[in-house]
Image 1: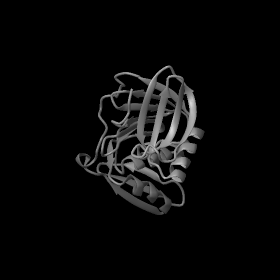
Image 2 (image 1 turned 90 degrees about the vertical axis):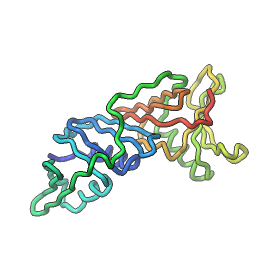
Image 3 (image 1 turned 90 degrees about the horizontal axis):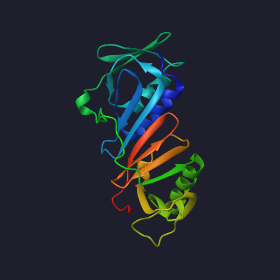
Image 4 (image 1 turned 30 degrees about the horizontal axis):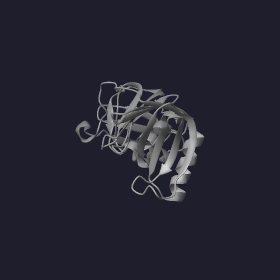
Amino acid sequence: MKIDATTISVLKNFAKINPSILIQEGNVLKTMSTNKTIMAKATVSTVFTKRCAIYDLDRFLSSFSLYDNDPDLDFVENKIMLSINDKNGTCVYADESNITKPPEKELTLPSIDASFKLTNSNLKDIERALGILGVTDIVVAGDGSVISIQAYDMKNPSSDNFSIKIGTTDKIFKAVFKSENIKIIPGDYDVDICAKGISRFTGKEVEYWIAVESTSTF
């Protein structure tokens, strides 16, 4: 079998969340960060034929560059065989007990206390602002009229900040995210936030559950 380019893109993104992954049979990929603040799930076009654990996902994907083209993959008892023309290689399965795995049970939000649409353009602007201003927090705030997304420093409210209006609301809230937790594939997302400290980012083929910081208010 081969892994198509879209699936590789998803795996590269997941490697930023957790360097290891447990791949299960089928076409659904899941991962969870080692500190359990981020979980992601994607439905991909590649159908995996065997359950296997990969300890260094980034290295596994980088090894594809050793071949002249996308290698053929054969999932056997304890390793993945990679081959194309006269080139061959292997990736030995990891012990699942050494990998942080997402729960088998599907996650649901206990409640939805704020919702908004996040465009790829808005997120790119916020990420640029984080770098330029040297701040580390992403805040989504509702003032009872407008929802805005902000590049902000929760430890120093008087520091420089940047804000974009992204919607309307009749609620007053402030949802705080660590910018390092927003590791999502570029695209547009429907975002739901629960006051109990969790959010869901729903894209076209991928979902992320991301922790909301305790400094948030609802």
